[in-house]
Length: 559
Ligand code: F6P
Image 1 (cartoon, rainbow, N blue to C red):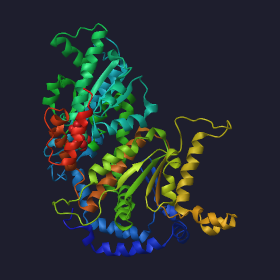
Image 2: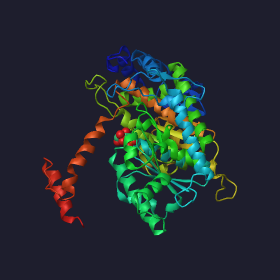
Image 3: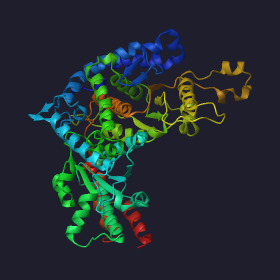
Image 4: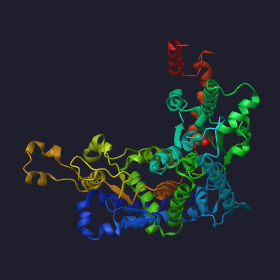
């Protein structure tokens, strides 16, 4: 990546001029001027059809943006990432999540290590384990087959597998229900364990570091719960040997830290490893996906990986001008830096994708929420989009008013599917509910783009007083992503698409998308404050606000 900011490229000024022109124009005009606009700006990437035409951009601007991307070294940096160079400079690591989905006959050697073989060795062990669970060969301590797999992890060790398990709910074929406990709020643990049968429950402790306090607290609490519940059922739980036998049958680990896994009492034979070159938020396709694999089965998990790989190939090989993650990444830069957009809505028209926006929040905001460049100097431009969203049509009845008529420009990605896993008829007994959902999907992007003018309202006979309130300004940009059905392959492709969008933006902003130093201080201070929060010492946080809040907390604390 070049050491210079994008603002110093020759293209930056041109883009500022282009932005002025595009601020003045309308999507109606852009479509009128370019009759083939929809087909010119629609691309296929793996199973995804992506229509970029309803964005506030023209071909010339795209050309300048891709030129700027070249000047910023995007092609070299992309190659460096795929080759396993240490693109994560502050941690001196490769960022090789793309290696996690290399096909079995693929090759990848980094620093003399055959990592394609390593990846497939772990995948093989995950497959054996998932098959044993699903066939009933793996049983709990009292010979019950496993029906509930509870993932204990947070951040990247939770959001990926929990989002994907929900998204692929129709593929849960073997009677194994996945559950996810992440928050250190004990409410999460209690609500999820409530009603679970301990004899048929297995816990997956997912933590790359195996030091994350939330996950360790939940893992120990879950172990205590399990032992207590089994004891009530008459399972012997007194000796160390008995506890070890229970732990062996009911706990496995996903981690890079074998020593800590052993300390918890898990046999390393029941540990599924990954590597420091897999960032937490890029890890759903590593062993972190174990709970997902257990519930949907190895074959569908492999199809999930193939979806990622299809988009990796596209991203790696297509010229920037035809490269969908590149274009989508550049659009985000365009709106952030030239239209002053603050946020980016992701609107999946599929209830099973309801957690996709939350998943993207970690992927994009932990990656690109940075204000210094790779060399540590301050950035001189705005970075990082604020991702948020909600499944359609619920969002329409909540925040879409602001999208349509508010004063913020919020580019939105609409994600929809041609077919549903749950075909159902509507009130008239004839209309497909899925078709209703999708007409909303198509209507919303249309209204956002083209709006309704005062003249059109007048022609409809709308009361003059109401016209200003009813005018729909239009020119609200959106990207439409349409796929045939939400299958494992489709989901893998969607995730990889956003991983690469995030990467492109990181390069354009000159930042490191692969570290997350900003979350460390809060963790440390929480640790430091624990003794005063517990009342073991008087709070001396160094600021009067924190001290008095903790004193108030202590005064009302029930125990
Ligand atoms: O909150 C920061 C973070 O390090 C994330 O990047 C990561 O996904 C999460 O914590 C969990 O970390 P681990 O998998 O090591 O428990």
